Length: 289
Image (cartoon, rainbow, N blue to C red; front, side, top):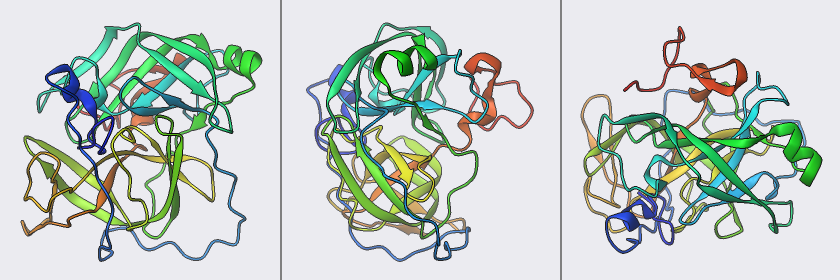
C-alpha cells in the first residue's frame, strides 16, 4: 500500500506510528486480464490537469460526481480507505455515515490551492475488495463551481479496458503520471488485505508516497476509472508494501516496482438520489458492513 509520502498504500499508518513510507514505482509487466485491449481511439485526448483534485494531510484525492449527481447535491471527495486519519481498516470492516470534519485543499488547473473544503461526514470507507473512502462535503457542486469555477471529476460507470491511456493525478505532490492500463489482477494481496480486479499500470506510472488516493483518469474521456493505491516496493511476496498477484488458478506472481489501482465504476452502483449511499440498492457492488 502506498503511504502519504512514499507509496500508494499511504500514511494511514501515521495514526499508528510514524508515517510509514510505502513507495511504489512501476516496472514493466506482461499484459493480462479478462477485458480486451483497447483499440486505437480516434478521439483527441482531453486535457487532464489538476482541476478538481484535492490534497489531504497525508494523501491525494479528488472532487467527484456520478452520472446521476445533481448540481444541488452535496459534493463528494474520493480517496483511499487506507488514508483515514484513524489508521488502516481491518479486513471486512466497512464504515458508513461517520461524522467527519476533515479538510481538503481544492486545486485549480495549475495545481494551486484555491479553497479549503470541509467534510460533514465520512459517507463510506473500506479496505476490503477495494480501497476507498468517500467524504460528503458541506457545500454543493453548484456552490463550489460558483465560488471557484471548478467542476467535479465524473466517475465512469463502466469497467476500464486494457491498453487505455491514463493519467494518475496527485494533488498531494502536484504531479501527473502518464501510462496505460497493463492489465487486471484477479486478486491483489498485501498483508492482511485482498483487493479484487485491480488495475496494473505499465511501468511509466512510477508513483511515489503521497500519491495514494489519486484519481486515475482515462485520457480519452476525462473520467475517473480507478484510484491509485499500492505497489510492490522490495520484491516481497504478499507483504505490507509488497502486494502479490493471485490468479484465478491460485498462481502467485510478484512484480517488483509495479504499481496498482482499484477500479471505481462499482461505487456509483451504491449511490442514490442526493448522492446518498444506499448499500441495499439492487446491483450495489460495494462491501456491506
